[in-house]
Amino acid sequence: MKQIFTPLIKGYLFSNLFAFALMGITKLFIPSSDSVLIFSEFVIIPFLMGIISTWFWRKRELRSRRLMWYSCINVFIAIGLSALFLKEGSICLLIVSPLLWTFITAGAFAGQKMFERSNNTLNISVVALLLLIFVADSLSQHNYENEVSDQMVINAPVSEVWQHVVAFKRIKKENKYWLFKIGMPSPVESTVDGYHLGAKRKCIFSNGYTFDEKIVTYNVNQNLTFDVTHQPRDPEIMGHIDILRGQFLLKDNGDNTTTLIGNSWYRLYVFPVWYYDIWAQSITRNVHLRVMEHIKELSENK
Image (tube, rainbow, N blue to C red):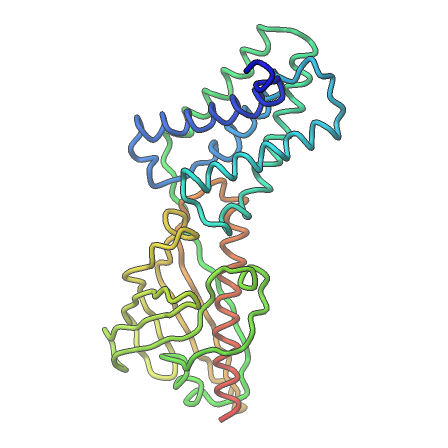
């Protein structure tokens, strides 16, 4: 049994046990944290995981390349446990992996320096400070909303473009965006139960999931705005992002062409924003472009 639990294995085991225990305690005692994945869960905890694992590896005198490789393995273990116990989707785990690797590795190098000096007072102070930041972050309010806007010129009059904005036929064109190619659902069709204010609209995705929408602005040839009233419980988005509202604006350019503007508003539940909003904007933008390119094709090929 002692041979099984080598210092290397202990580093992996106890760092991951610590991470899941700390997250579990947070969810248990801070109910508001159930709906939000905070900055500290992707920065402070991975950093502490790196420090903890290095404490078990401190006598191995690891070179930088080996320490980075060990940290990479630790990331794979953390991701596997997240998939198993937290039921996270594969795309979400792919997105989070660079963040985890960066801070687990940073923590491992920090731990290596800490334990080389054998200054227990300093080491305890560093860990205590990181835990204090984690607690303060857990108790803080986390709210973030953003808007993404894209536009495209279509060689058709606004009256023609409008016909394909409210609802459009199924998209059969192959996906270009790499996340769509590897399995993230992409928009394929939009349906509506009436061409008027208050009508119900549906945005259907490639895996069959449907976003239920309600038209809140209906200005013919000018403005279609809809609120998202229900979104699917997809593991890739559930608890991470809410799509709040979508909008198409049409501008007559006066030369038989139309500028189509697509806007979307969303709320994030994952932090840090500086990392996750890059992904949210990219995904939202490519949803826009896929739909808008389809509308352009339908309008121009009348």
